[in-house]
Length: 477
Image 1: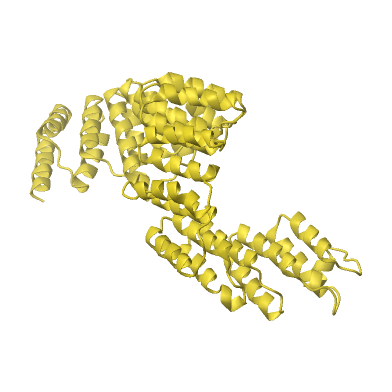
Image 2: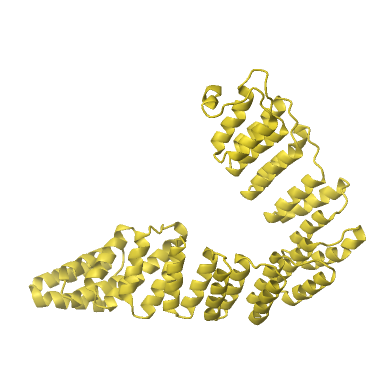
């Protein structure tokens, strides 16, 4: 390791903590950062020794790359080297496990704190409590809070804020959240911006928008300045409850108070406008958003596209679709389906087929959760092409659909046979019919009669009899 490090870093004779910290911070590649860390103490015998600062930095680097095992191994190494394992380092691991939704591992690290001779303070308990609430482990969270109190930790603003957040998640406990909020001054705790924002967000999610509005007024009277998150929560609540004019006024109020709306603020408003068939106004909000140098995200575009398709605004939907792709965002199968379905509703089946080709070319993955959607898309377009009498393209798409293992339904089979018979392409019609029976779909009498009549017109009667025999045996099976 030392030989390798010398080719990367020319260490001075005096290696200092500040230099090692500087080099680790500057290194974006986690593996190279580890090399810097290891080489610092290996360069000179009996030279530099790492302290909690350099250990903390490299642990943080590993956690940012989700390398939890290596991070924990480093903490074990700290103990072996008699370097103090700090509360902040262990909490950084707890937060990292919370970030990747592993609350059980987070609790495991918390419970090992004493093994590392690190006595958890109120900060540790509040951090763990907060992660449990964020992960919706509410039963465990409430037990943990009770345990905190039994240990003698007094209520403080951060812990009460987390408790209020937990209680605000359910309509059955929201009244308890409000009660605790009102009792905070009795414990010497003054509600802050986060307290009000948490309660307003909970009330809005539970569709108690009027109560949230009143709390916002009280908040300002008490001298707490609402944050962009608080405004966004209220705008979302108003938008969801069809109070769209109030939501628009609130957006203007934000700007008047020099509180800059973010992408979530605009997206909440766009979502409400689209939900209540005001997609044209939503388009205007999108332009305002872009004009303020906010990049729409996938949620913004998806919401707007769904709204435009619901109102059958094809040209506007295509414009948004193109803007998404120009921004480097990749539409999923659901968004393709919305546009393809709208094309089909407008009898623009060839455009729908082109869109399906584009979807395939872009490599939209067929996942288990979207399997039924891909079945619906492919069958709809095949039937549309049949309705447009484009037998060749319908057959090609049919072959491609089967090659992908996507199911073809009975109605699609019937449409294909009918259009191929109409075009007198009896060979392909026969192939489709064979595969139809193999898939367990029994042709209707009309489909069978049509095919038999076509065969009688061009082949010997015996061939028609043979086909009929196949049909009868297929029915018996």
